[in-house]
Image 1: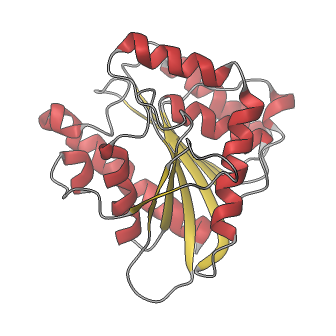
Image 2: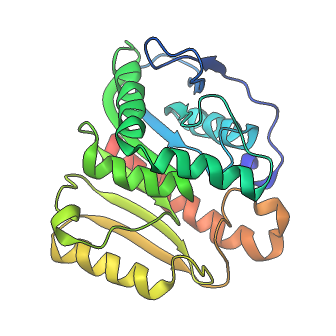
Length: 239
């Protein structure tokens, strides 16, 4: 989509407060054109917070018929450098029940809308990918998880709490989540009979998908393939 190529127009959706009684958590809602109801998607930002690139990706999902809520786990804040980003990441990770409650509220917000079918998937990148997996294991029931190079859970006792299909895109040059670890993760999913679509793209590194415009020659091919796999996955599990 144009969003990851840096070619999308400014965000077209609206800011929403989806956590009852919390005016600092400000998500972003993108609604497809036309008559619903539509399947729904919750997307979780990277380590720097809910920025316009994530909003533009939400718009891209809406263009494909998914009512999309970009969650805000940082209470309206964003980071502008690695130190600020890690401080925000660690704040969320130190209180995972609050993060799960935030995403439960996002689900309730979507399910309360008359233009939502009742099918909901949750996805994220980097920090958000790990949170999406944690939410798949510990959040309210939903229909699918999609993660891009997020922290993995290897314990079969934990993974068996996943009761829906999982999509995963990973990077062959990722130092933090090396391919051997991804292969073990896939093996654990397979051994538990959990439907999954896991792929490692070799020539790219961590974080490659959301900012293809930083190196289009290297990133565009893998990013396009990951997008096509994601579209097929979402169509299968949500439609």
